[in-house]
Image (cartoon, rainbow, N blue to C red; front, side, top):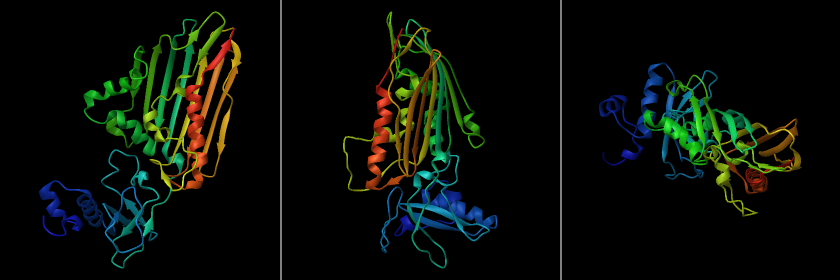
Length: 334
């Protein structure tokens, strides 16, 4: 559309006429609507996922909106990335530089860190293993913020594919699984409540059972819905880092499962508790055996999106410890 098109915010009438556009056109539409409602709103530029150096140069690839609140502060809004997310500013953009286009000018800003509790992923399960090694379980997944968006990834696309996508999460790991039911929240009302998905299923030959020994790993310990935990995709073979590194978003992962085993089995070899305590990363995983029940608890708290090299040992150890519980079974003797 001519020289300077990449930097030109079109008028509201033009966007309505064209009925199409990119981030700057969406930001411009929101600015027009906010101004019509009586707010002071302006455009802002950022570099999605990257830093901006404090020098006058073209370092931007994304346009957003800022609106002035009653207290005089400005709030960032992103009409491009937040549809389908339960927040007004995408926290996947935390610790990211931005420049507001205010009439009086503005200095380079930095988006704040979002509390991990704003992006929780909670998975709970009640399961049971019989003497044939069959596992029956009820698993419930709830999430908020960016974790909510990750879980809702199974609903992207055609509504007719939602059931298949949900079933795929189980069958891709256990092709012999017998899915009894899967229920989920009404995706048309995602702004009213966090996502919630509940599976009920059985998996034959899940555990190894002999006359005197039972070998089993709790279902949730093995990484169900692992795609919602991008930290597990990191290569942790490297013990040291010289440069900052990034995760998808700050988040809190809480995993809990109570597994009932046949009576008469007692502890023989149970993975030891593991923990990491750091100012921006923490991990705690533990087992408890009592009255034919195996209780597994795991909590991972990742405090930001952009980490410094000094954070790597704790981040790396948290990933290693979670992988340890994924790959280490409980061994019980009769």
